[in-house]
Length: 307
Image (cartoon, one colour):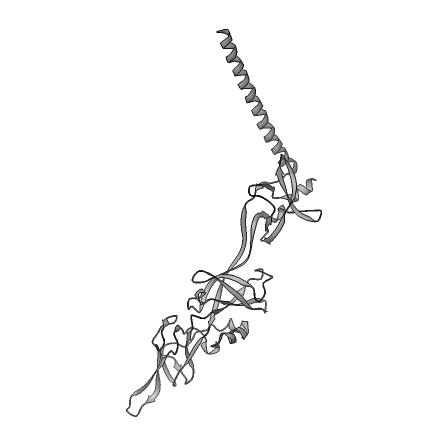
């Protein structure tokens, strides 16, 4: 019995000793980590993979290849279709009631039909928009941005030869005239591509023209017709620069020996490790050279002040 009690006592002492050791290790580890943080007054944060992406939402004016439909006579116009409708070849678009009467005393009514299939456009200053997209590409951007005025309306008086409607070829690429914000993608140049979301899926659009006019940054983009879906004016989301990597605050970067790096918590201490900067955007950076969940000093400037 005494031997059994002695064995139980020894087991209790061993358990107690291990518990004390565990507590000491835990306290030491906690104290050591706390000491690091207090010593350097840093903010340690785990890092993750991600993407930095800029985007803006702007109003786009849409210009497309098409056919202008002139009035066959002077008189009063009556539209038979609505703006934005898709129409087949030969659709009667409008009737023009000419002034005066024919030999039988009847009023003269002329019907205007479309020679091509497409989307009808009544809401633009259509007489100023070239039918050929090459000519649109050559027009002054600031002038293009002012073309969206009220077009001819029902019962308006028109002159012979005056353009009263336009049929847009919705199978051909369209041009989007937009105004960019001053800080958006400052290195953008003609020939670059941007991702644009209009009425459907995100599409790729090519920069055809860039102009700075009277403090405005204007751009002309060529995009698939599906971006506009026959519309002449719409809000689009334009996506600019995109950088993928480990995302950090820009304040975490520290230049050392001409190289860029960050302070990383490792083995109970802070170690400087080099990184490759992929891109910067809005006071954040995307970098290579780190692994997800590594703890990094996000306010490295304070570390430098302490050293």
